[in-house]
Amino acid sequence: MEINRDVYLERLIVRKHNGFIKIITGIRRCGKSYLLNTLFYKHLRDENVAEDHIIKFAFDTAEDLLKIGEDPIVLDNEKEDRKVDPSKFINWIIPQISGNGMYYLLLDEVQKLGAFESVLNGFLRKNNVDIYVTGSNSKFLSKDILTEFEGRGDEVHIFPLSFAEYYAFKQGDKDEAYDDYSVYGGLPAVALMATEEQKTNYLISQMKNVYLRDIVVRYSVQDETALGEVIDVIASGISTLTNPRKIADTMNSVRGMSTCASTIDKYIGYAEEAFLLSRVKRYSVKGRKYIDTPYKIYFEDIGLRNARLSFRQIEDTHIMENIIYNELRFRGYQVDVGTVESREKDNEGRDIRVQREIDFIATLGSKKYYIQSAYAIPDKEKYEQETMSFKRTMDSFKKIIIVGKSMKPRYDENGYLMMGVKEFLLDKNSLMI
Image (tube, rainbow, N blue to C red; front, side, top):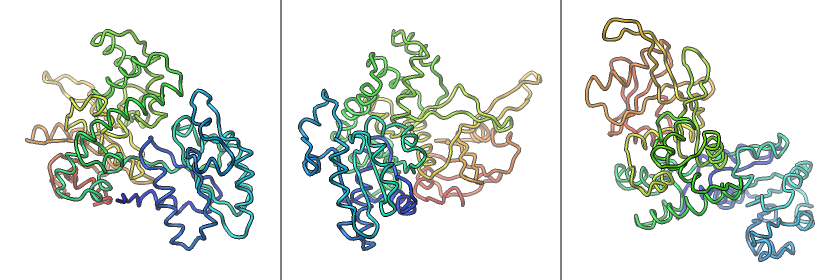
């Protein structure tokens, strides 16, 4: 069964022949190799690119390693920490790209190639080579990979399946599909699984043995227990304002651990670089400046968040907010948490300074939207609470309220656009209605 990733495929297609190394990044198991070696490869063949002008090479497969005279058994030994000999690869590939016409290099797990940065930068000097690479672990799990290519890298970042991608594959009842997605997330392997037991066991195992292990190995983390506890505290508090000091206080008082704020800040940074977490700063709408702390933290995949908590903390409100955040990033928006400060009267008539929150400020070029995630608005009081920050902005940017129940997009009496979360997720143009 094929899961379409049309958005990402189009992003690769528009980058063809641009003189850059196309770098496909993203959390492990999100579908990077599938995008490159299946979907993009099929596109090239459909465009009548000759088979011998598409060079696919995976640095983690025995079959390909044997082609260049490497011993896959030795290379697979983690204790050896050996890389593929770049000379062997270059000597093998140069004859493959010596003819006329454009050649496409589709290189998977390229971080296993020794001196891969120098090798790939060297290929850029050839006018008839278009390069696409993926990788996992180490540098290719990191946000800093673009710097390795001396400004000649063009990143395509892949997220786990959006709800629209997930539903296009699963079909069926939308409410049931959303309920499943909000618990198990959008990793492609999970979408292909039939039972809840399979999904649960897979996600718990992957979180422990792949994602956190990668962080421990890459950064030589000595206290794995503390790292896990930090991730647990963050998972419990998604969509709430936090900072390293607050997390340290929670760990020290509730869990009986002693971990300093600076160490926690490092652990959060490690998880960000691995694309496991995303830290979102607050932006003062009237002050037009960023506020460093506190901030919010979201998970790249909600299923991994739930797995870390053994699926014991499924709060619809916070999960919906995380899903909305991921959807905005999937659509290409820069996302901040908004704050609006104003002077108001307290119950005794005194002037006080009040700071109100806008869940998301989504910006793409000249487009800007203020968005509130409100799982339920049962009465006028709740409506006023959710929209007070909108009123205090005193500007004309579009203001949107997303609720948990199904609701076709409509404007209310204050000119705010309201819609259900499924309607928002399934219509790529929902913000522009």
